Amino acid sequence: MAKPGFTSTILHADRRSEIEHGSVHKPIHTSVMYGYEDARDLAAVFQGKQAGYSYGRQVNPTVTALQDKVTLMEDGLATVAFATGMAALGSTLFAMLRQGDHIVSSTYLFGNTNSLFNSCIQHGVDVSFVDATSVSAVEEALRENTRLVFVETIANPRTQIADLEKIGELCRERNLLYVVDNTMTSPYLFRPKSVNAGLVINSLTKYIGGHGNALGGAVTDTGLFDWSAFPHIYENYRKGDPSGWGIQQIKKKGLRDFGATLGPEAAHHISVGADTLALRMERACENAFKLTEFLSRHPAVKAVYYPGLPDHPQHELAGRLFRSFGALFSIELMDGVDCFEVLNRLQLVIRSSHLGDTRSLGIPVAHTIFHEMGPERRAAMGIDDSLLRFSIGIEDADDLLEDFDQALQR
Ligand SMILES: *Cc1c(COP(=O)(O)O)cnc(C)c1O
Image (cartoon, rainbow, N blue to C red; front, side, top):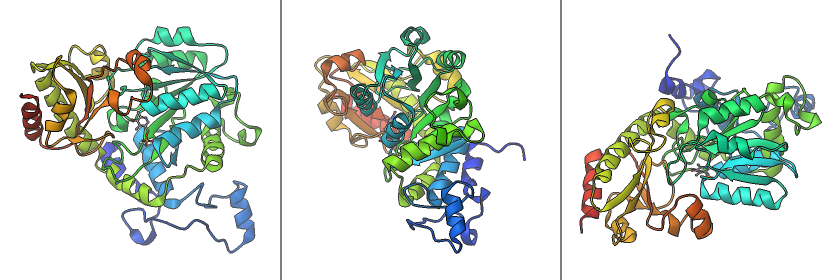
């Protein structure tokens, strides 16, 4: 067979390694510890001389199977899973950065990531927030002590798209670690490895799990970054092939020492959800595309932000890099149209936070998830008080169109 496609690969990922009793799903292993007949084997596992399981905070067979699946999805080298997407991000930063370092980050950020970077500043790691839709803004912000560049693919809620390719080129030239949060696109729509990312973050809670029943996060090493040039790899982890140094340090200093471990039950839910990632994405993106076409012509709607619309500033870039334009958009309503009332009139769309679910969700972002950051930071991110964000699910398109139509009629 030629190289199998995305879904064929994911569906049969678990069977690549031996599964107990011919089980088709990797079973849920709940044991915290692992016993050995020969204590020498236990020692060899602890010393990394022998493959094996030691303690549940660091490794678990069910979680390992999911990590391997994510690695295949991202076409990467290795993946470490965490309890949440934020845990993946926070643990990675903690493992890789030191006081006195500098990060260049897109200013268009998931709210809690923005909060996390502000904590970094309090702990002595400086962060420059720049308009990452232009590579020159990133380049101008670079300093001698810049250790990494961070961007999201499609920003939430205004759907700005980072200058992904050119920033990747810049990072390659300068030997900088390029960290891309791929949550909004998921590896089905986009592989950050294709633009030279060294590390890829995914919130497994969102599209990959997809069913709103489990939290999880992952960091994948694409194999492209030269860790031997990174100054903060501890002596202990500078052993063997340098391509493995980064993920090893994230495993030890991030996962093991911080302990934000993904549980085996959650890993199982996410793994089953991931089987249908491509199908769900296709459907949800098509629904979002149809809805934004309708909304952009609607007299009660002032603005629609969606990369699939021809007037989106990065429409061409999105069309070239992503398999589709995503399933998330936001709208601003005409003056005098109450955003809360429009949301309240929706029947199919759930008034809720979260995104990347099978069900359509809507939220007034300035009043909820982006409330804590305050009006100034919101203005810098282009978040109007009336902005409504929608994460579109896999409902029937006609039903969604009818629902928005009736909600916008006064
Ligand atoms: C949700 C989200 C996260 C955090 O993921 P959790 O699993 O909720 O911790 C990080 N980045 C982006 C872009 C997200 O949308």
